[in-house]
Image (cartoon, rainbow, N blue to C red; front, side, top):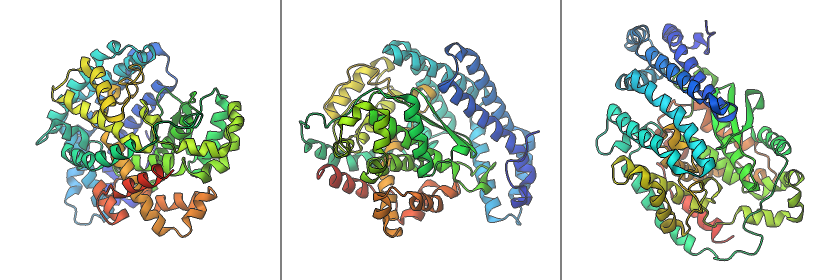
Length: 501
């Protein structure tokens, strides 16, 4: 018997319902654990049995949501006039989860989960060998299964809307087009104004570092900014990610690569996700309100810690000497030069290594390709060519290989089609939230300059993290910022930072 994950006394009228729901929570977290293991530790030959495990867990999870006991229990409490506001919110969210699950057959859910496990292994091999054709059949099947997923979920205008809504509730492809149209022209104009030739040695710094020393410094930084290593851990993976097994077990991954800055930026990025998950109010544990409200809000946090903090002078004044000790080649690079190059804007083929100014054009490329493939405007086999053409048109560069092009991201291999626009939502929302934070926290620049992030961390806990999914994404933006999503703060920050640097 699984012990209780929540304080039953807080929701006296939902005790039976949440007791039944906790089995679903446990199975879902077990899936997350197995997925984390596959990307971090699992032997290559373990993929077939792992895909079987994931498929069975997916089917069992679906069976719990569709089971008569849970639905009967939920029906009994739905119209209870004595429900507290929190209980009413839990009932609302659980009803929504079950309603969505009813649309998806268990056999289909199991099929998709098995495909995700196999497709990820195929992507990993294709990426390492730089051979797109090894991944293409799986990707073809993945786009088809996502079309079917959208049909089950239902949509009005574009099948992409149903997929996007799973990551950013209430957002549509039309909203995405509007957002990209708002920022695309100003960004491309700023990019054209950038200096074409940077001073020698100012662009990037590469070198081999001691992995264990790097991870030791990473862990020290994590604890300083607010990530609790007693409720989390840090490992390495091909593509950095954050896995929230439970609020007391949040796992981050990073990668220690030759591009030195990327190792630190990816760690800070995933830490933003992790701190969000660790600091949701404990009263939501074991309920449908646990977890971040949307991927856009999640990305606003990862990008805040990666860019606002991770590119700041105060951060590097505190930690640069430790980074130098892990990378001997940095002894010849003074702090001033390091700070300058971490804030230089220059197009690159790798999204996760790109600067803030060019980053959203990477997202736009992926968004346009996803919609084109879903709507049969281009075929999967033509993705490499379409990718390279868009890279040339938007960023003026062409990737040297598919490894640096269409094979660089993990998302398509795990079925996350409709995910990418949330990165741009996060980038925009990051600076909108930062503007509000600057108004609320007295002497915030002093905290930034001294790398004292506790006041900032506590502000985020109070204003965003604690609520989990209590509010809808658009409601939370209004609550935090007093207005809808607004790109003007992001565009202003980019102009000040990159045209005046």
